[in-house]
Length: 375
Image (cartoon, rainbow, N blue to C red; front, side):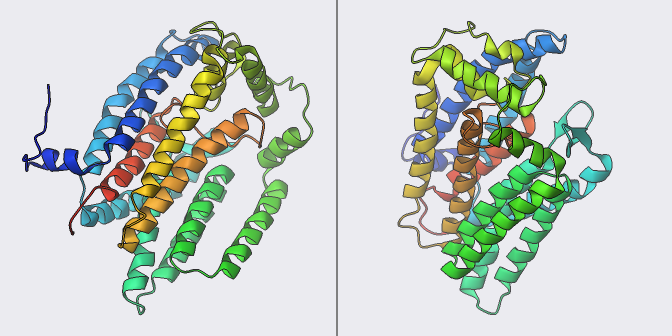
């Protein structure tokens, strides 16, 4: 059994006694629950494609090992290494975003994935945490040296990322990154007036997206004017099935493997896995998931309340806002509280790119919130 003494000065020993073990345990618990729910939801989806029952479950388990490795390895980084890793991942992800319109795969009207020999990668998933690090670095550099154009660099990078996302188009990721960036900018000293102006511009952008992107207008129309949803692969159909799953599950659920709605949900293992949890394990598991997500968010924020390093404060804020908001968006769309956005439930839904990118972001949070004397 692996044990670390307090006198252990090895890198892993220092890591164990300085990392936030509560947050680490909560993340690992989410991964464990993710395995359970993917095993419950994915066979029905695999049968729809005439694949073996555990096709998705096996791929999910295969990605689990590199996910845990990325989580732990990233959490070992120093502040300098975090900045370097953020820049490298951001640069690589932006290059892939640029290439996506030319070599990407189109799925459901959006071109967001690149096929790498049997493995599809979604570059925007990796841009998300990396941009939080790079943006925090630019804002903090501006605070340290007023002559450094950190704010302008961050604005330029934001416009570049948003422009590339809208080309795909990926409105959900654009909203998520914008919310994160505005939170960082506000903490870095942006006046409230500009925050309000940015929010108004965001609303205007959503209105523009409604008229510019057909798939966005369809989703909003179906959300505002619900129909029976005859299209098996349409958003309204999946939402109706999802709501039925919540109704069937009640407080205690139907029991493991007893759910029936997952047989009719094309994305039961991904975007709508929360509905599978509700039908088979009831409100109890759903509330447990909400509590775990809340614990991670609150715990991460509590670790930076006394932090004096602006980079650490801004980076953790950006990363944890992304994490919490993504969970909220997924659960809210599953409950028909907002239009569907095609976002996974962190560490629960099936998806290799999503899991690896989330592990990178959460690893950064664990590294940034470790107790340190000075770096």
